[in-house]
Image: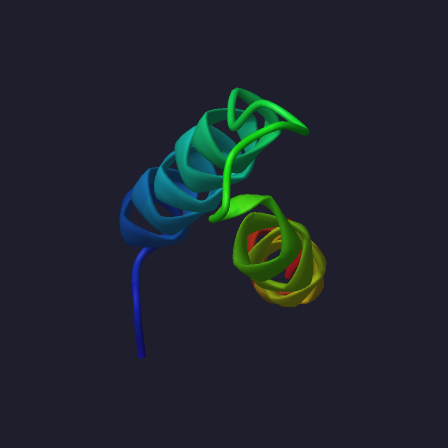
Length: 54
């Protein structure tokens, strides 16, 4: 079983990844992919938050 410290690291990583996807400008050809990834990352972040809270 993972320690809370490990889950906190996972939470921090998903938060950072989500923030990075938000920096992709609308004018970028990568914007649609970034938006899809941001949703995926937010789901992963939610899961990690739940695990960290246990």
